[in-house]
Image 1 (cartoon, rainbow, N blue to C red):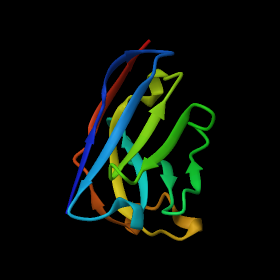
Image 2 (cartoon, rainbow, N blue to C red):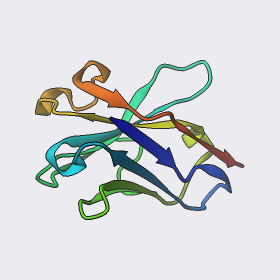
Image 3 (cartoon, rainbow, N blue to C red):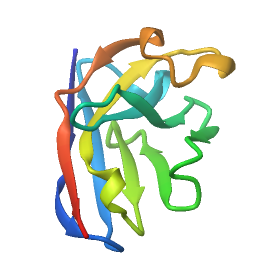
Length: 123
């Protein structure tokens, strides 16, 4: 089982990036996928989650700016990030799990993690 996160980079505030999380050896469509992020000196936090049934969840800090989606044919989940802010700077990780609704952003609910991709937003 392998998750490959990609798409990070350096962008100016107000810009956009699209992160991808591609899976091998299992079907992403059978699982929920979350994006977490961890900024230097801070704890990892949940950003967004999409269920196998396509229901989506967002942290308050990214609502209206980030959109999570999935393409089961490509076995990939995306995180479209618009209107980026310097406080969005972090390493972003994708993770696979089947969390209960009340715990979609609890790290312990996830089985597999990607290696992370760095997003840097300059002011």
